[in-house]
Length: 109
Image 1 (tube, rainbow, N blue to C red):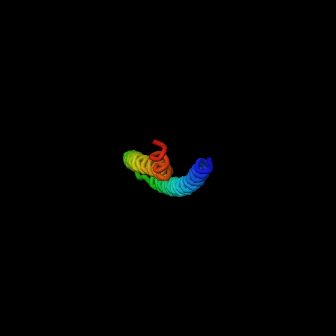
Image 2 (image 1 turned 90 degrees about the horizontal axis):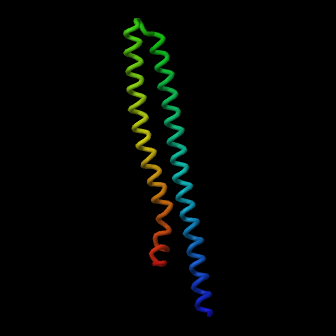
Image 3 (image 1 turned 120 degrees about the horizontal axis):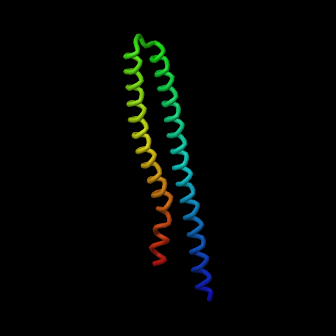
């Protein structure tokens, strides 16, 4: 009876420690996502401001279309790259948050 209580107590402590480790990993990953989102927003705003300045200084209609086309192309490429980066960050976040529980899952089997 005492052995069962000790085993249960030990498992509870391991689970709590694992949960705290997982929470720390999750917090770190969420912070990385927030920094990345902030950087992307800042870059996007700067690129938009530059675009407006170029567009207002266009010499002709054709030049304005060319400036707009370049901006749209650059914005799309930037978005796709950032979406890929966010996907990688979310995958890393999930992997790192789950990693502490792997040993407990293995023990439970």
